[in-house]
Structures are given as structure tokens and as C-alpha cells.
Amino acid sequence: MSGSFLQPLRHRLILLFAIVLVVPSAFGIWAAINNFNAQVATARDAALRFAELASNYESNLLWQSRQIVQNLSRDENVLAVLRGVDEPRIRDACDRAFASAVQPYPSYGTAVLFDPKGDARCQWDQTKRLINVSDRLWFQNVIANKSDTISGYLLSPALKEPIVSYGAPIFDVDGVFKGVVSLAIRLNWLSAIGQEPGLPSIAEVTLLDHDGRVLVSSTGTEKETTRLPDMDHIGQITKGGLRQFEAVGGDGKRRIFAVNALGNDSLFVVLGIPRADIIGPLLNDLLMQIGILCLVSVAGMMAAIFGARLLVTKWTEKLAKAADSMALGRLDTMSELRGAPIEIWQLGEDLKSMANRLEHREVDLRESLTQKQLMLREIHHRVKNNLQIVTSLLNLYARLPRSGAFREAFADLQIRINALALVHRHLYESEDLKEIDLAPFMKNLCSLLQDGSGVPARRVAVQMDIPDLRMSGDRAVPLALLTTEIVTNSFKHAFPGGQTGIIDIRLAIAADGTATLSIADNGIGPATDAHLSPAATMGTTLIAAFAKQLGGKMNVVGPPGTTTIVHFSTLTPGRPA
Image 1 (cartoon, rainbow, N blue to C red):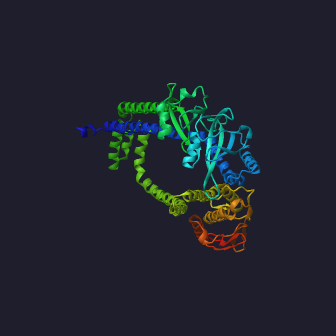
Image 2 (image 1 turned 45 degrees about the vertical axis):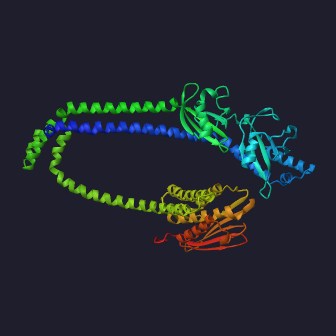
Image 3 (image 1 turned 180 degrees about the horizontal axis):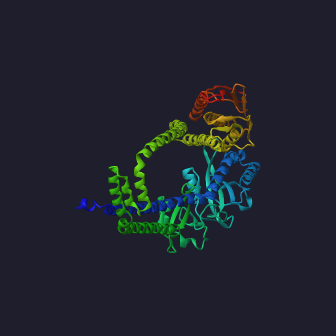
């Protein structure tokens, strides 16, 4: 029965409209729902990123505190006090060391060196002499764990204001525990929480201590309890590691919460965003999309039911009769199509010349396809080569032990990939998309490498002498990677201990197109193979590999300093000069 129902063209058109409209509309509704869910998940993930952004000031303050403790642990007078020297001159010098370490930072109220019994040995401000702190929980945690500890909410008797105390162990030159450095962080300096650029205006940020007590809040201390989740959730945050969830605040509003833990889970930045402000617009868009898709489906089905016969099938029947007559060579039957829609009438006319047109069209398509294949082959060839370079680098670094060296290796890898991206950027900006201007490219590359190394120009300056020269992308890629490896090695290893120096980069071009690249530094000189780390050894291997890819010859001399000289041709092999 279904076969007989589908025999008329009108019925088939109705079925076709059902397939073309109803089925895709149903799929569109399903896709819209999935997209809605994906956007909700993205919003939740964004909340975690916003929580990290909202923690920038606190994270920087904790990092700054660690740096202050490290600097104090290297001070000779502090070390002398730790060894038990009780001379007034040494104690005064120790006090001055603490003052010079923290006085530039108004976020600290006090800075004190305590001995293992909790008595203050030296401190920044003698007018705020502290009592014995051996009974303080944060001090006991530092003594027990020999690691940094952040207290909860404290009311400083010396400062007469609320603080949190950052405590860190300090050791003598032999690694023996000798005491504790305490830095009092004023809470009023954390009151600007939640005002970081880039945070949404509807975000509400609160800083909690390890007991779940509110330290500061972007909404004001009188409102934070009405916007935070219940105590069960806060307990899971401080003890259970809960970092992302939805919950109803004390004001009855449902919020998306994200948590960023700081200082070994001692402080918690809790960011809340009203769910309605994020999900509401997304839900409205979803309902709008579903309504439009349903309306289109209904309109299409109505058009199929009422318009198929009137506009299509009546004339297609006549066209079929005319086609049968034309197959027998009777062309005068086209008169039956007078009054038909122009499309159907034109279709009848086209039947006369269809075979000839198809033949010519097939030839044109073959030619167009050949041209597109050539273009795609060139594009894929270039992309494949660059991806192979990236893959090879990743494989090399994946073999390193997973430690600090592993993270440093991947940071180096980012620099190398950025160097590749810089080559492509200069190619895209060039007029012919094939060659780059070498001088501005090398200048941008060296700036990129200095920024990535973290070594300021006032300590290690980079000098360049690069002639005006255009170079193809095939030559620029290995040259960029070779320069990246050599200059990065100089930044890392040539100037230890904060030494100053110069990295000099020169390129000379001979008349026959031969180039001589010289990269020299006045540092400590090249290290022997026995003293090279795995990452440094691999860097040396990569330098040799990139020099070989350039088809060049490399020579390394030094000390004094380290000078790497590479001779190579600026012309791409196989291309005319």
C-alpha cells in the first residue's frame, strides 16, 4: 500500500518536504539543545577561569612573600642571627634587612624572624615588638611541616587590625631548620578583590580562610553571607576540594560558583555568578530557535500539500508527455508547455541541447578540478612540512623526565612554535606570500625570544646587523628555529647568577648567495657535554639538525664567550637564483 501511495509525484513531493524540512528541523532542535548544553558547560568553565583571574592579586602577593623570604634567607646578618650570634650590631643589621625587604610593600604590616621556640629574634618595626607565638596554630604548622603556611583570620595585637600571617621556615647554609619568618598581610589591602580587569560586572568574589571565614568580599562584608552557598558547600570547599558547583545562596538566588585555592589550600577565592544572568539569555535563544524551526516545518508541509499540484505536478505531467514525443523526434509538441512556469518551459527547451552542453561542461569541470588539485597539493605540502616539524619537537620533549625540566622543556617548545608562527605571519603580510623581509623578521624574532626568556634587555642586550634581504619561507623556517635555539641557549646558560652581557647577531651575504650567520655572546663559554642537562643536550642536537636542514656548515668556538657560525645558502634548493 505504501508503494502505491508514493507513485504520484504529488505524494512524493509531500514526503520529500517532510524529509527536507521536518527531519532536519528535528535534527536542528536536537543540535540547538546540544549547543545550549555546551554553552552552559562553557559558562561553567569560564567561571573557573574568572576565579583564577580574580585571584591574580592574591597569587602575586603570595609569590612576592616567597621571594622576600628567599632573599632574607640569603642575608648574612639573618644567617648570623640564626646561628646564635647575639651581638647588637648583628641584630640591628638583621632588623634593617627585614625593613629593606618589606618596607617598600605597604601590604605588609610586620615582618619578624622567630626562633624555633617562638621568640622574635629580629623584625622590621621595633615599635611593634611581638609576643611569643609558639602557641599559634600557623607557627606550629610551620614547625611541624617545615613548609609555608598561611594562617586564617587574625587580629594583630601589634597592628590593631585584621591580618593573615604568611609563615615560612628558614634554614641555615647546611640545610638545618633554624627559625620561621612571618609576614603579616593586611586584610584591607585585599579589599579590592573582584575588581580585576576582564571580570564580568555580575561576578561576586569572596576570599575565605581555611576555616571558611570570610576575609574580604567584593560585595562588602555586610552582604557576603547572603550571597555565599550554605555551610555544607563551604565545608566541602575548605576540606573536600570542591572547585566548581551550582548552589542557592543565602539570598535565594541560584549561582554558578567557582573556587581557586591558594597557598596550599589555605586561602580560597570563591567567585559566584547568578545563573539566571548567564543561562537566561541562552535559554531564550534556544526557545527562539526551536520556535523558528517548527514554524518552518509547518509552513513547508502546507506548501507541499496545497501547492504541489497547482504549481508543479500539472506541468511536469505535460513535460513528461513532451519529452516522450521529443524522444521520438517530434519537437512540435513543446507547444503543450505554453503557459507553464518559466522553469519548466525552459527545461523543455534545454532538452534539445542537453547532450552537447553536458559534454562541454564535463571538459570544463575536468580542467577546473585539475587546477584546484594543484593548488591544494601545494597547500597541503607546506602545511604537512610544518606540522612534521612540530610533531618531531613534541616527540623529542615527550622523552624528557616529567619534572620541572619537563615543564621547562614545554615552555621552550612554545617559544619554538611561536617562532614558526612568526615566519608564517611575515609570509602572510608579504605581497607575494612566498618571501619575507629578513631584517624586520629577525628583529621581531629576537624581541620574542627576549620576552620569552624573561631576561631584561638592561641585563643582556641583543645587538643585530642584518642586511636588507628577502628570503623564501622554506629557508626562513629552519633559520628561525636555528636562531631560536642558539639565542635561547645564550639567555639560559651564558649569563648565570644575574651576569650582564651582550648577544651579537650578524648576517653577511656573499655575491653568490652564500650567507654567514654569526651569533656570539660574551658569557661564560660553552659547557662540556658532561655538564649539559638533557634539555640542553637536545637543544644542541636541534641546532645541528636545523643547520643541516639549511644545508649549512656550523662551527662553535669559545671561550671567551660562545660564538656559533653557520655558513649556508640563501637560495631554496631546486629554485633558480
